[in-house]
Length: 259
Ligand code: 13P
Image (cartoon, rainbow, N blue to C red; front, top):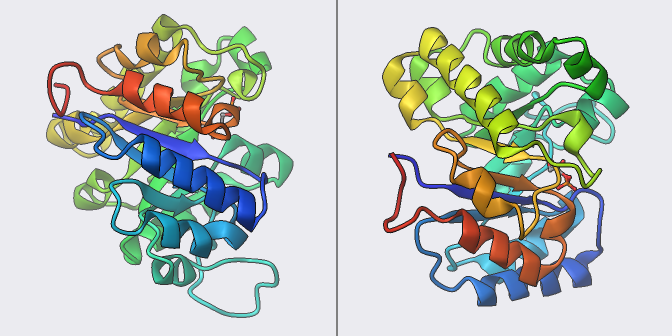
């Protein structure tokens, strides 16, 4: 049984006032979300304001990245301890923008995943192929490599505490989402791998989100696929009405969770 999860990744958008306003609108539009969990990930600087707005509401908040060390001489980095202090629920790790624009390696991402777990944060590990890799028929090879490396060294109980997101790079910010069938194929593959790496039980309970041009008009078709357990939303999470619609459309039909 997996309750769908919708995560808004605000990326590097908005100052504190805008973030507060957006968080307020999401909170007020989703007072009692049924059959779906919702988390927003604002820029670091807006986290305290967003936490203040969302405290006591069913909407959670998280961060877009974290370093693997607790503290030290790492200019410009944010540690998982700092995110715990801000009561973050989850942290997005290995996002394609981190991998491609900032050259994060699988090994670094793996260290970040382990550090997040060590501090009680839920890592949302992102994987996904580029357009060229898909064209070359390398989709499964690429996501498998990223998944195995990202979860390396973790035991089943730790993997059980993770979240995954399949975000094909070619679908991010392009307006061209993967079709439900394309996404479902990769999600099924990832779930099979988790079953191998951890256990069938862990694979059945682990939520795998889809990200890449999710909008109000495609969310329902994507999340009704059995292996798609919600959405990681970029651009469309910056407008409260659209994001609220995505959350509602991603909710499990007729109950709090889907099997
Ligand atoms: P878009 O929804 O803007 O395509 O971004 C997806 C994404 O990268 C979420 O992490």
